Length: 227
Image (cartoon, rainbow, N blue to C red; front, top):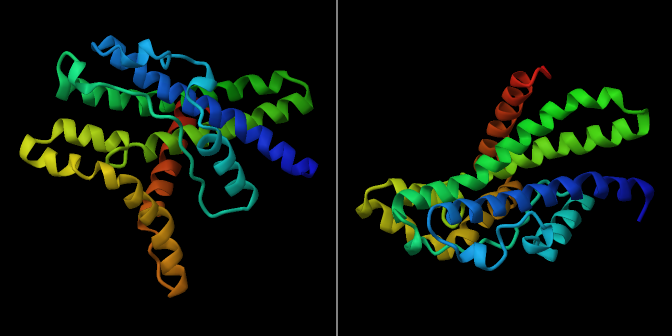
């Protein structure tokens, strides 16, 4: 592995690990507060990355895609177990537990943007390394937060949608959960690749995510005095 490749991995790995660790821990902590101690008993309400990181899904898969200059990054962590039936008000609390993960990512993105203001006080090599990490942390947390808000179970957005829809509409959405990963792979990977073979643009989902991420990042930078 070349020096540039090593540097590239180091400035992406830490932001990715922090983003997914805090995201999953936030789910578990919210569930604990709302009556379900499943994640708490299993030690998943923790900021220890080893409790949440999936070696392949969190580290190797995104790393390989990054080094291969893939047009997309994809990865996952070990999902935090939640017994929604144990929550005090299951439908309402399911929404709050699901929203806790993306909310944590947006909070981390704001903290990364605020931290830009301290980089000028560091010597040059350390300053650049921190800037690169903070930039990637901002991007990763915004993209992770928005991606998880897509209204497709088992993503957080799908769980939120199931919690807020009337039962007669929520049940058909909930039944999509076993097929959610297949749908996402189709939307973000298969369709764009298929469209490229025929000279067509099937990147609607990717474009929607990218556009939303750009707007969110710009607003965070404005709010934190970086724009």
